[in-house]
Length: 361
Ligand code: SAH
Ligand code: SF4
Image 1 (spheres, protein in one colour):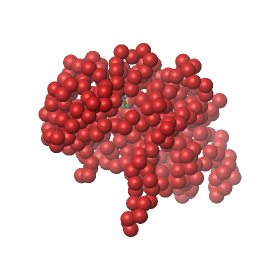
Image 2 (cartoon, helix red, strand yellow):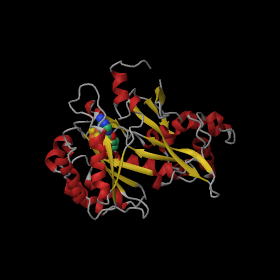
Image 3 (cartoon, rainbow, N blue to C red):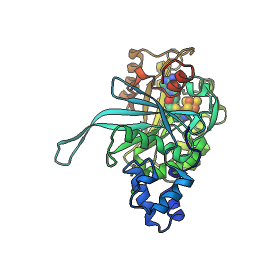
Image 4 (cartoon, rainbow, N blue to C red):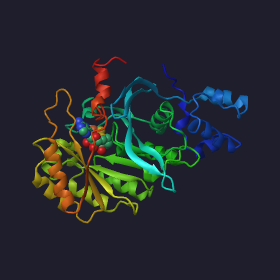
């Protein structure tokens, strides 16, 4: 059973420095936590023994327990983590075959790491196609529970503290429905003395809570935005995503137009393609006009079927046709590689299998 003590990873370095004097101790703790992946205060040998004991009485360093890992043929790994109250969330380590180079042109790394993380247990938004929605909403994750997903995955895969990783808030939950903790986690991730994951390497994906998009934009964090659009007219979007009643397409587009976008970046519009539902070329045409005047890129996602769903995966040919229609007209459009499809990559699926007892832990 995991400890119910307070979570030290919930604290920003500034909060830690307030709490522990002298304040340089905060930097030392940050280094143990985020560079050496410490699992106990006992390990922190450059802290006075008494301080280590006091910290241990009040705080835990391990808010998550790994209950299951699934490996995909493409090298992606999916994790199921248990929280102190027994709830579970999923995260995925994705390997992108994308070389990084040294300044002299030699190859530094063969691939990039991206970690897809969860922000809530379940989700209130209730999208018709989403497995996470089926289990309802349980609770928000704290900043530390969000941060720990990345720390554990880096540790488990021997990813050096200096090695760059990207973060996408595309796991379970609606990040903007847990805005305060998500923003705090963004700040903890980006702390130069912690994991130092620059905000331009972090992407928040949202079902389109327009007022929260506006609020996030005003914070000027430098974070990337992804919008789960999935439909181009309100009637269909409402059927797929009931939240569209509260925040319709026009309100989302207006909020995106106000969002501060890094010069070298674009707002990503995710479009989940479902066979015979939203895959016709007239939708692509409408998408083009909807995104006119926005620095946008479109990411087409194959619907990933699961037991009991009425929706179907589109054909490769239809995906290609949809993509080509857009790219020929100057809109950046990629098809999301079905990373880890063989390990049921669409989030919520591993947890569901576990709950149904379909897989042995
Ligand atoms: N709640 C946020 C982030 C988490 S969902 C959001 O909706 O943007 C991350 C992405 O997974 C969303 O774009 C969502 O539409 C997609 N998704 C959900 N169910 C899926 C499925 N069965 N197959 C493929 N993608 C799915
Ligand atoms: Fe929630 Fe995103 Fe799933 Fe919709 S797609 S139910 S917003 S997690």
